[in-house]
Image (cartoon, rainbow, N blue to C red; front, top):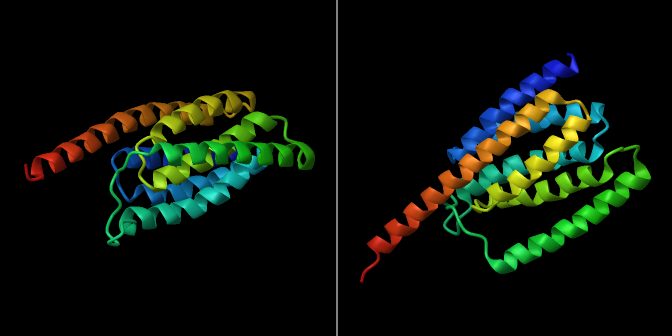
Length: 198
């Protein structure tokens, strides 16, 4: 199968995947499995090795996220949407820096990558964002928007124009998802407050 045909399939699966995330649907994880598998092949053929490796990690996160969304609470019930706290945010920022440095080193000295720092940035931030999404942190959408902006520039340089379109759609869906999740979260907080005894 030609690379363009695979890119088309990844495109369609990816759009459905992100749309279902905005709807908080468990089915997003099944489309995620398809999307990351297809992109692993695409990135290998375009020498985006960090992105290729990232898809393998994403594949793990599809199963991890599915479990968390279904049984992630202390009572083994579905995980509820939450806001990230300052301590967790700081820890994730430090992890992102370490990941970026490590991935950049590996790409520079062990591959023929021509986009080391952009590739490493996307990889490091995506790992953090994917974990945040698995835990249903509202702010994961904001990080995905940053990732999408970097990705669009990178994929333009690799002439993956259909993927550029995909990530542009992703960015719009992420903006939609953030406000949709925020509204849902605010409604749940309001409902909980109203139900609490005075």
